[in-house]
Image 1: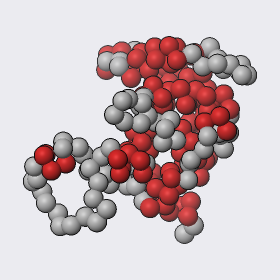
Image 2 (image 1 turned 30 degrees about the horizontal axis):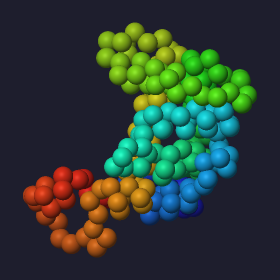
Image 3 (image 1 turned 30 degrees about the vertical axis):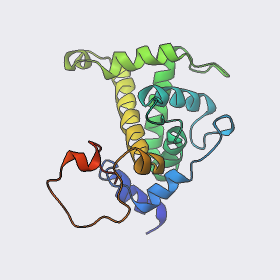
Image 4 (image 1 turned 135 degrees about the vertical axis):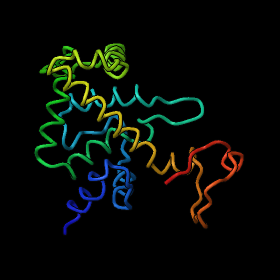
Length: 194
């Protein structure tokens, strides 16, 4: 079994719940200067949209770094390039193109991505009610599913990054025995890393 198949089997089959050491090392290898990033799998324009959407989904706060600070867009691009099936790759690109078409920037080169437009798009789809989702057209369902998948991947990549795992979440590099009921004061109300 090659590395790609192992990643697909472990990372994707469980809805990317499992953070294998290989996946974690791939995430840590995504350290680039923001201006120097050239997507591996996505087009440059799709990369711009991805960065803007991910930044709006997981923005930087006073207490925590944002998704761009831990290179989530770079990881998503690399993860899909290395682990997704050809069918999944086509589907993801098609979904990003539908998002770009909805925003009116499809087939436009060197277009600055408007954060307000992206924010409106996220609100329209990710805050929609089940009744609204049933009324979506086929194209709108594609946009909705792509945004939902993008949000899930971004949160997963964010939570499994070294920076977040060690400095934001509760972290124990050498875990001891399983304790089912512990006080929240022990972790200061934080979730456990890995």
